[in-house]
Image 1: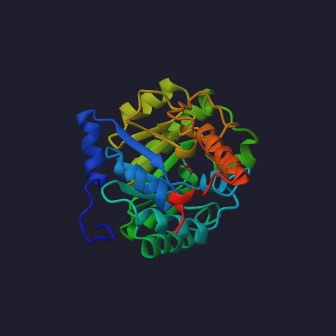
Image 2: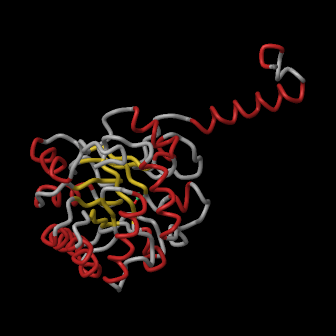
Length: 272
Ligand code: KIV
């Protein structure tokens, strides 16, 4: 159910059906009401992710680690007010689920109760299975996240492509099966070789949503701010820019500055 009381069109069941039918799944991030309402209006986005990438694009942090549960709930509430049909998935932030399944459950319950989102996402495989199990036991759908896991950046030390070596690729395959067996309804695969993404997508019945995981997976996700060209500095190979909003905004701000300084704004038609 959405906050309007209407049933959601995109459900976990529908996503699995889409995979069966070979229909690609479209996912985008949103953190605020206005962006979410534009995404909703575009029609055709299946999942809106309230990602902890909010730490980077909204708050200017270098990593996603500083994000708090309260901040995620605030962003999720804003998005839920705007989105009608797509499923809304909210990231469990760093420190809210690792190593403590009871804490994981209470974090997930807070997100669901206080934001009315549809599901949560968390990073990791075998090491977070207890948390996944306990969250699922409360009837909360869980999306997994493997490959590059930004919450573990201090362990990796770098944002380069993951699972290029056999050992890490084997672990990723094992983890993806474990997450599916445990009951996750989908998994995000971030920044891994395309052939590995395609292999996992073939082996699993649940959808695999890629970001830098090639075209052989079941759907794609991008950070909205990145695909809209709001950032200049983030230029990974997987990022296709669909707009150049930073340039458009700079031009608008410059014109406004010019008009205020010159006295051109406001004119008679803009006065009371
Ligand atoms: O936080 C986020 O935006 C994400 C996506 C990159 C998948 O996890």
